Picture 1 (cartoon, one colour):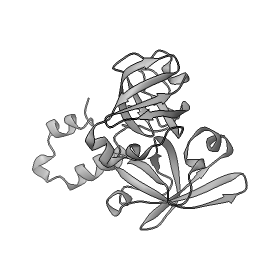
Picture 2 (tube, rainbow, N blue to C red):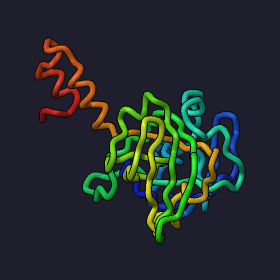
Picture 3 (cartoon, helix red, strand yellow):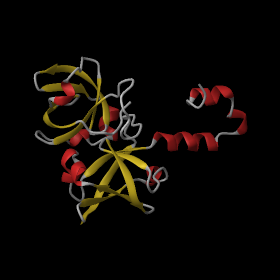
Picture 4 (cartoon, one colour):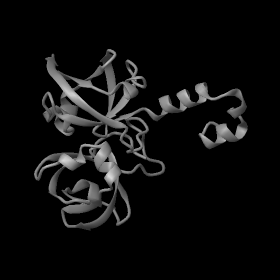
Amino acid sequence: MFTGIIEEVGRVRSLGRDRLTVNASQVLAGTRLGDSIAVEGVCLTVVEKGEGWFVVGLMPETLRRSTLGSLRPGQPLNLERALGLGDRLGGHLVQGHVDGRGQVVNRRSEGGALLVRIAAPADLMRYVVEKGFIAVDGASLTVAELDARSFTVSLVPFTQEHITLAGKAPGDEVNLEVDILAKYVERLVGAPRSEMTAEFLAEHGFLG
């Protein structure tokens, strides 16, 4: 589990058919083989590491769902280590399970803020609400505006300097993960009464 608060922007060192090597420093502190790191919002397992770099494995489903298959050497990457027990939750609960890809439609400045509009598939837009959370390339952001086909996020100057979205242009793709709470609510509301058992609620985390 992650928070969507990006710790570091690393760089692609190399991309193979089933592995990605990343240049980084901060996220390597305390990281062991087998640990999880979110790379552009995708939860991946560290399989090798060295001074200033680490390697994660890539599965076919990961490449189908995310933008990782189109990465280029030197490209910046949002990085975040998995949330530790007792850590502060500064963003929102992010699983690192990408739901799909969106596309940057336009960018505009408003005072010191940068507003980025992103088009998203209809099956994801139903989970997006104004002032709600969404993870864009793993960064926890608040939805400022939305319509039937797209939503807008507003990046303050600090955020612009610490995530990759500020450097993306119209037409660029991004990884999207909607708020998991919206999915649980939809599942619970849509469940037949016969399914609303104590076992069902416990399984989905609504009972201790």
